[in-house]
Length: 450
Image (cartoon, rainbow, N blue to C red; front, side, top):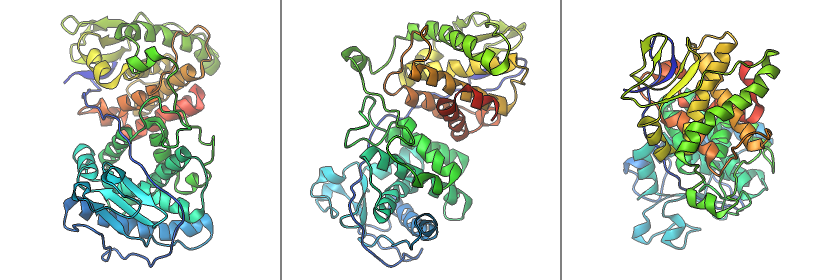
């Protein structure tokens, strides 16, 4: 299998070309009503309780009710009122809908909490089976945990624009997921968590959605960032969400050409321009980090896999992307692998993967071991810091501007372009995303102190 990674004397990374596409789910909200607590063995649903998807949902509902019975009083100072309006497994084609849904379009492809009826409904015909097929069993309770986030908002009388409500619900879902990963309710593995993050990318807003759109749920970056905030720091980290905190980074399209291209720069512009832009970035940032001048890398080598370069006299034929430690250059397969990643993941997926290798080079220049997992995560963080520089437009010499969906493409590259052996070297996608978003939110200095 082709490899991605540093190159010294041993192989490290492998790439797999898979990608989640974009979609959206919706929620509805207003005011709650009271109900008795649900016991783990007594959750009743409207629908076929023996359906495999509904079995997972029932288990999730029981655990979510128990989780929030404990967490809600800690956050809000009064008892949690369980959801009492019912749980509806809806088959949209049947013509039978849940309260708050008057037509198939209201529930088809959706899951929602409706506070007017204080109920939770989900499409058991298409949405949840499709998500389960793509992302595994654990994505189903994560979807339910998001909807419970809206139930918590109703009980706490949380006010704010839709996008803030949505990403706070993602944060609450992350807090529950951390609990579930530690308990017998759902033994979620690191792979399960990676699949759940890929599910958030699938359920993101379409690139170009304006964050003030009343239907906005957040970009993939916004949603994954919030989920991981809750997962890493607990439900208390979600309570303080408000307009502007955390910032929502959805970027609208600014011209017709960007819309037509889907925000993708031409492939040739990426493979030729990104190394130059990274050199510009590190020439400015490295001296601030280290007090030493930046020594430029040797020119990047965009190679044909039929004729790969050597590194320190050793072959690189198994690699699609690497940093060559002894010769101080980044190499990548520009004929087969990178075009495929570009086609499936977009321009900034390619850019991000190249940026991680420059991050390894920066750390190697500073004397760090490029084979160490912490170094690899710091390099992912530095790729995020470089992305933030483009987002902030803080370098006049940079020819790049952030397009809608670019940060989503970046985290997608870290989660899904993977293969056997990656985890041992890089860490799971979830921790790589944590590192990347640390760089985006806090800059390169945060990367060297991780």
